[in-house]
Length: 254
Image (cartoon, rainbow, N blue to C red; front, side, top):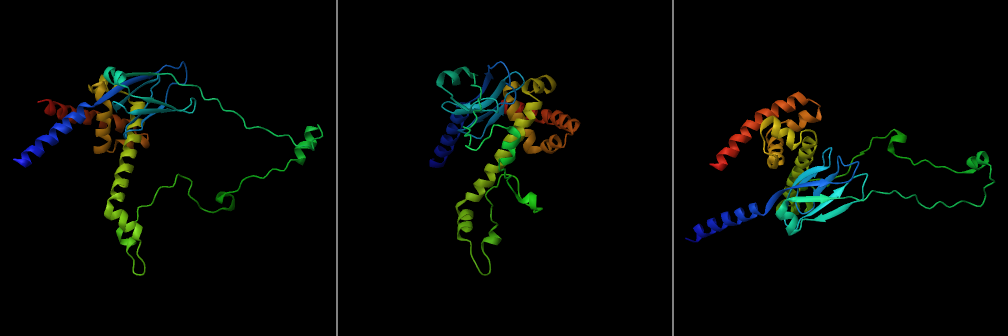
């Protein structure tokens, strides 16, 4: 009886959590440079980008914070208030980003003759490993996940790595990187194949576009095809997966 009560409670909690999420439709109302603005739900792993007209869609819960970022606009956070959550609509206006120059201090030894003054200015170019013909890493460094076989050596033991394995930290780190990679792939694909295109071409409901594209990313090589610019292959996969996805939706409704 106790086990039955726990199972029922579990499904009730899951149902309530599902109802707590909605697909929020939004629009950036600035007159120009509204395409490609990144929207991150800082309270979850979801993100999105605006289309040519500043429209976007992202999964949210009440109280979540959405962060808008772009090279053209200042960073802005918006909270999903109860009113916004109920209407499933958010209108945002961003402040243009103004790049201010640092203060310039003029030295005392200027003659007023540009040619002479330029020659007297000492300029030192920054050096890096490329200047010396050395190999080096140019990307953003990530925390290394030490394999368990390397953590326990013949002459030494990496206590921190063993703890990270036993505590599940490395497993969570791998899962987080997987989610971040999938979110990035979905955002790039939806930037090209937006919800209207998916609805018109394959009958995918517009409020299901993110879920459908995530399904494609998780079950096919669509990300690799898109990265290699094999757009015909991408469309072929989207068409075939849309039928599978439709069957899944129908079976859930039944």
